[in-house]
Image 1 (cartoon, rainbow, N blue to C red):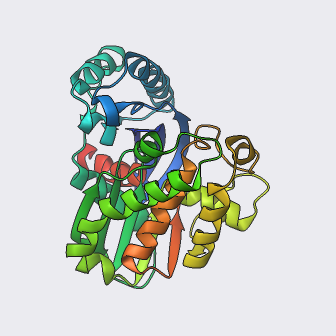
Image 2: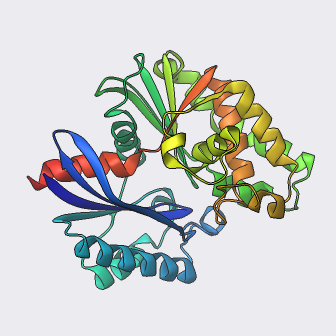
Length: 308
């Protein structure tokens, strides 16, 4: 058994998983997250803000201490879309290295996609082939595969923070804003449709990350966020469309009252839901299997393998 820690620095959230890995299984010890919005303004300015670096680094330092106290023998810190896009991502890496002693890896989109696929499917028994998609703050990753064999992967710059910053100015969003967001999501997904045969031919579609899990919690009408109830639940295309329409006409204050809605997701979940509808339409998806395991679990499996 190997106890490892993985910290994922996304565009919207910074997340921690401390887990015991043995016999190809991941048993979580600690799983937590904070909204740090590392990618605030990156889509427009192509730079990480000083404030965003500071608040993200503070959370990483806290997570690193917790990991060491929990007995993790190996730690990996990964940064994704925002860090890939920013011209000053080396400033962020240096700041984290100084505070934690570990230099973050900036994952290429393809590596991020493969880790998400591994984490979402390593213990999932569903009809093959499978397509996993991960809607993030700055990008969405798609991976198609059979069992553990990856057939194709794609990372596209369509994310809930990115498109919120581009299009949503009012509260609630105007119908024109939502339509412009929807049109851009479809445009950004066009490469997936054009050459996406492995993705379109999947028998099972698995959605990971906050947009999908939040919509699942809403669909299940949970009184509070319950990962056990959400994991492996299913969302039909009709349910996804209904939830997206409901969110699009709501105010942020109304969304904050939805049971299980994380305060740091309420302002970007409209864009996330619109992106999800666009994915469902582009790939002809009838149903999405919701997974609570994702890139963190995939990176934990890979880190434990390398540590032994």
